[in-house]
Length: 445
Image (cartoon, rainbow, N blue to C red; front, side):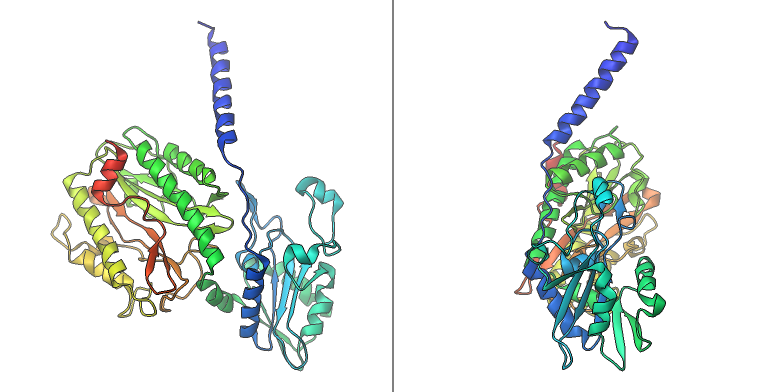
């Protein structure tokens, strides 16, 4: 037997080789940008809503968009309108009026050769293929933004629709100082009009959400086989995120939640630091991100491979609440908010309140402590009105849950749905088994 130091060295080499093998096994991630015409159609729809106002948006900067695991990530609204994933750009969109034609201009930073040694080559407005690469009518250097913007602003009054959030203040300050604008210009927040547009997904967006959901479903299948007494929550989380990349996605849409025992009752538990114990349940709330688009799918599993009678009772009530909400859905009528006669949340909560009791004999509704749904898109909790009726193209979750700390039972079942053109629901994530019988069979215990 080799000496201890040598054995340690050999063990480290084996772990390094195993990690290298794992990384090499991952398929290369290819960023799927939709055709340029899709982004142009969005800009034209936006222009129709702008009236005489003019939209100005800035891309994120290299520092703002940095993520420790995936590098720069573009601002969601900017990407939605442009499909442009590089930092430091700007866009201007203006509707046609008597005084000007329809205008769309992408502004790109000047070449910085020194910086490109660190970040790689970047497209500039001077390149001959700038129009074909970006899909814009015009591409100009960023230094021309002020002149071009003033050229399209109407007078004697003008409104600039833009991002008024904290990260946007620096570029706006640059535009405002030194009399960059005439004194008749005012600024409005562009978020409401962009949120309205982003609520309805086009076919390309749905395809990307479907891809992210498929990777998430595969991760759930892998997790179901790895869950067992003595396994660490973090170990399962690592397997999940490997499967995201294996499915061709660049990252997680949010921090994976793998919460067992008492942790299963904590909604946004993210430490994943526990060890699974026999007899507990584990809530696995995960979502891959593919080409900027998210998914969100939750399953609850018995650590030992079989639900106890009480766990099974709670589980079936949560699943029944989800099924009740799905059955109640009506396109153009149902909403995801908590109030109103058309609220899917009310359907699920009523089901939970009328099925089963806690150990004190009281209804279980008080243990359903979060909303039923949220939109999904460029953000896992995507923009959109919770009081607006759900229409074709809407992508949203249905995720009832019951969390009883005194019994160490937390159950959440969540799926991502899209409203089809005919007004029916398409469950994108139902490939991840979810009846108690199916789960126990999949776990193979």
